[in-house]
Structure formats: C-alpha cells, structure tokens
Image (cartoon, helix red, strand yellow):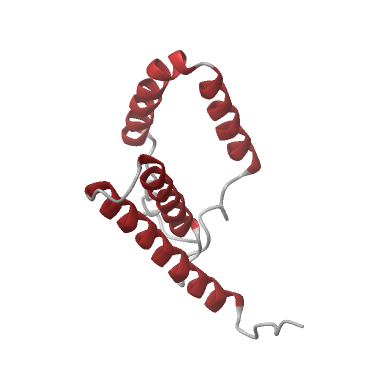
Length: 128
C-alpha cells in the first residue's frame, strides 16, 4: 500500500509546481542544446520544445502560495466560448488570419475604453 501524504494541499501544489517548472526548463534547454548541436534530429528537438512549452504553460496555470489556480475564476460560459472560438478557427484557418488581428485590436480598444470605477463624492450635507 502506498503511503498517503499528510501535507496540506497548498504545500503539495507548491512542490508539484516546482517539479513541473524544473521539468519544463530541462525539456526546453535540452531541446535547444540538441538543436544547436549535431546530435539531435528534428523529431527530438520538436518533441522536447513542445513538451517544455506545454509544461511551462501548465506551470503558470497552477496555484502558487499567494494566488489561486488560473482556472479558479473562469466561468463556464467563458470556457465554452473560448472552446467554440478555437474550434471554429481550427475549422476555418483562412478566417483566423483576419479574425485574430481584429480580436486583438478589439481587446486593446476595449481595455482602454472600458468604464473605470469612480469614487462617488461624499455627501456634503452631512448625515442626519
């Protein structure tokens, strides 16, 4: 029987986050070294770099000691919307060439034109 860890989940996630970050760095650096040397073939270099990039993205999404996981605040409707957008762009790649720059431009414009939270002025009459 395997022994169960008595560590709280946060400490367990921190350890797993470190291991995933280390594996990501190892895969990426090994891929780069093989790419620069004569030892690696394209298959090995591509595999190591892709695995390293996926592990790096997963490392960024995992919870750290001071913040929750990246997926903790994602609503189901936003998740489904992103999945549908990715599927439609994969189905029609020619549309992606136009849609992605337009989406980036709209996101930048929306970021700067969004309404800001303003503090309301205090009531000058006083509380009665």
